[in-house]
Image (cartoon, rainbow, N blue to C red; front, side, top):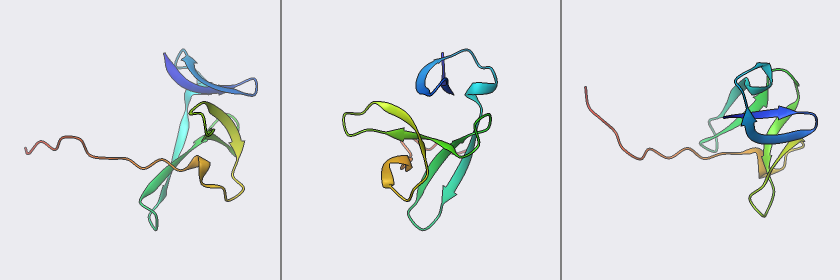
Length: 76
């Protein structure tokens, strides 16, 4: 199952098709990333206060920012 934005919904029931492709936007000033749908340009993965996902338009709200965290770093 893959993350997708399709039919006005954002969920983890994708099959890996075009609705599951996202462009990662790096926000260097805040150390965060945003996920923009490749199929639906201008639509981002957004989080609601209850933790549910929702496709949203970037209006400056912080609900599209994800803060990655390194859990384990392996040296080569």
